[in-house]
Length: 296
Image 1 (cartoon, rainbow, N blue to C red):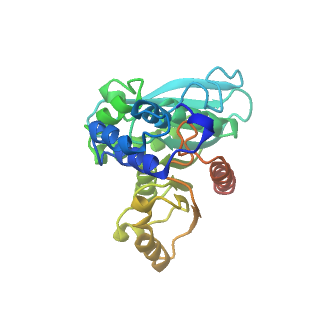
Image 2 (cartoon, rainbow, N blue to C red):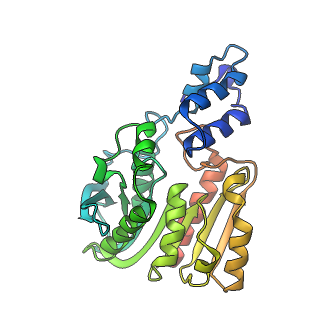
């Protein structure tokens, strides 16, 4: 991610193009072509494209070499016939022998450095975190988001859901976990988190960030407490929220929802220009408070 001249903010149209590209609504060729209308004032298309690409070199909040953390690769069986699955298992070196667990569900591009960082943040807050990589059966996150997105698009969504649900079962039964598990996910991971809440009633809580919605019929069987985070400018995801909220209310579901005005889809991801520090810090603080309450 590069800066615009004079630190000017990126036009909203550029962020909208990036969102459409990220979610498969346009090809890279069309994305680059769309940037052409914003290439003014000394900014080339290439510079604009570089501005929206994730910055994994300087934007991460934690270190994979943090000596206070124990980070290992955990292997577990995929229930969908894909063979073996794997993820980052992260916990503090010191502390209780057993602690609550949190599944961290990635976006639509595999277990990239941002999600690994979120897993470390979760562990530093006192939880044992497991961040699975849905791309592991295909060789794992390939080192860049574009290829990761293309790879993940080849996997069946329901099969990936089963893999993340199996991760929750695995973490619940891990010798370092006290049996209480919640989940948090972002974008695609928010959708998966919503579905895990519907299909795994034993979960202690679920925190979807700007993810798609289950069916209204699914809301009728929801037993897991929800904390939902939405971006005010995210018309694509937010379009389905009123109907799902009505279904949650009609069925007496336990939920709280926060909409952050003036911010974009992906506002929690501090490696892209959609990041909004104020909203992200507020949302993450609320997330940890929710975990503290539901995993106590």
